[in-house]
Amino acid sequence: MSRLTDCGEPLAHQHSYGLWTIGVFCLGLMFMGGPDAQARPVTYTGGQVLVADIQPNLTAWRYGYSGSFRWSVSAGGLHLRELADEGQLDVNYLRAARLVKRWNWPKAQANFFVWGGAGYGRTDLSNDLSGHVGFQADFETRRIYTSIISEHHEGTHWRYRMDTVSLGYAPYEHDFNRMATWVVLKGMRTTHTLKDKPKAALMLRFFNPTWWLEAGIDNDGQLLGNVMFNF
Image (cartoon, rainbow, N blue to C red; front, side, top):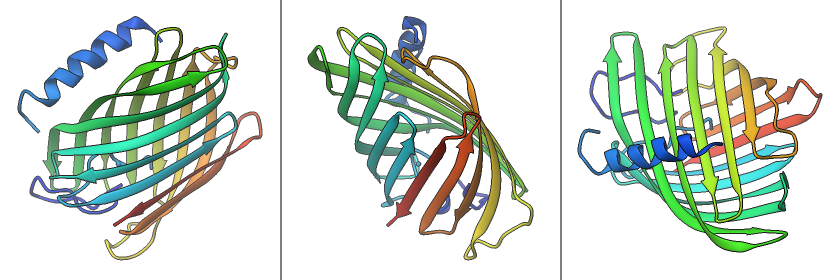
C-alpha cells in the first residue's frame, strides 16, 4: 500500500482465451492515452523495484523501472512446477505496464493498471515464444486495502493464468517513514495447472518506503512468501 497523495504522483510503498482477448484490449489502452508485492506494477518517476514471489509450485521474479508515475517497463521470469499436460514451465519475459486511471480522495485512493509483453517459454515438451497480459485494480485507505490481480501467460502449446483477490487490514495507522503492518486474506486460483482449484491464504505484510516482506500459509498448510525492494 502506498501513502495517499492529493496529486497524481504515487508515493513509495506502495484461462481462457476470453481473458487473453481482454488483455490484448487492455494492452491497446496502454498506448492510447490516459494514465508494483502485491507491489504495484508502476511506482514513481525514476523508481526501480525488485520483486520475488515464492509459492508451493511457483517461483517468480521481476525487475521494473518506472519512467513516470504512469508507465513502467519490466523484465521478469517464473518457474512453474506443475503445468497441466506440459510438466514444468520456465518463462522469461519483457513487459510494459500503464496506470490507466487513478482516483484520489482525502483519505483513500484507487487505481487501475494494465500490462502486456512477450517472452520465451520452455516446458518439458516444447519451447516457443509466449505472450503475457494482466491487470490490477486496487482500493486503499490507511486501514483497509483491497485488490484484484489477473495475469495470463500463453505459448503455442500451453497456457498459464493466476487470479488473486486480496483484502487487507492494518491494526494501526502508520506514518509514511515508519514500518506498516497488515493482515491480508487472499483468495487465489491458478488455471491450467495440475492443482486447478481455488485456495485461500492468510498473510502478514510488513513494509516501509524501501522494502516489503509478506509471509503466510495457505489452506493446505503450505508456506508462501513475497519480498520487494524499492530503489
